[in-house]
Length: 444
Image (cartoon, rainbow, N blue to C red; front, side):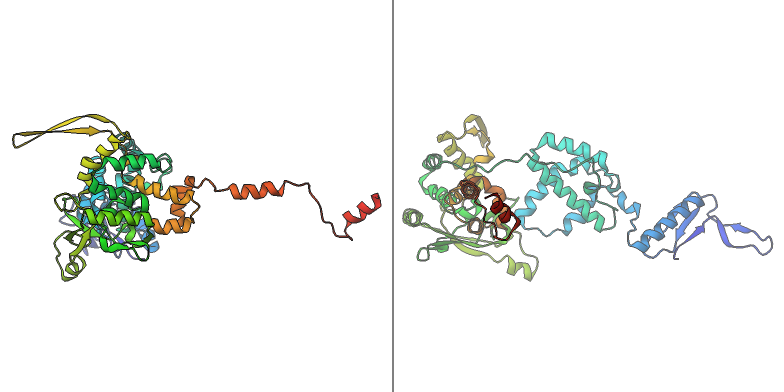
């Protein structure tokens, strides 16, 4: 079997005159015994022959099984592994990469970054998880845990770890957020919030509640996406902004385009909006705002021009973050959905600007309109398969998981059928020649 132990302090062959092995120039320097000759395994030195023999035997066995991991490769600190090996190998879209990078560099690197990969054990994970849950909500902590597990799984594939510690320990598990049901607004709340927006932005509420669009999809919608003759809207793109504040167009979430039925009354509102607020042409890169480095990237990121349905009063595309701050939250407050809790004072170039600060309610952001669309469809008895397709979900199961509570009739039809079953006394239909029939005849 491949592999052997070399004594670095003595020469291999005995002296012909003395019959003993002479000392080498390394006598008394460093570790004496070196394991060598295992294919694909770096040499390793030990102080005692017993340690060398044990390591050689284990290395030979693990190599034969294809499970050998050199502990020295796991000595790299987590932060160094992320920055030099893991992150550069990623090829995520900016819409995915930006929030992922933020979570890793804000919640993983500062707390576990100096820890060697091989030292990330159950105890380290327990401490980190406790700290994490003290800083962020459980739902966010769950996402961060998944990022860490993905990193450590890559370290396993790279031969730096034997097992992923996030999966190997029973005493520490991923954070689990409490199960909450998706929230939908009433008609009165939708109308009140809509009335609190500037007139040019009211169509955004109609698109959210009438088509189930995500915010980026609504702000990336083009007038050409409306097919009034067929009565559908084609959801082909979304407007996104990267971590550097650069806008770009990309496919809807999950890379799924879709067509959504357009109600006649919503079509009338859209046509009225087009007359009052003409669409604005906007040219942006596709998929990624970074300058292309290759011809392939240049083709993939070639800018496209879209006539946006929603734009600012200055004729620009809408920045979702600023729109939420300056338009959406004030409209929520005007409708009584949230309250103003203070005032923020900012100074720019000697000028002072005051702005209200509102309660933060994630459940009442633009996405609630999408939930309201789903609830309206399902409560009307629409097929879960159709609603899933219109929402652009990966599968009807995803829709069912999020919105089953919006189906008040679920189970009632089956319950009614069973109730009818038991509404009458049993009337057994027994074959004439059966034992039961003969017994009944004898009794007569």
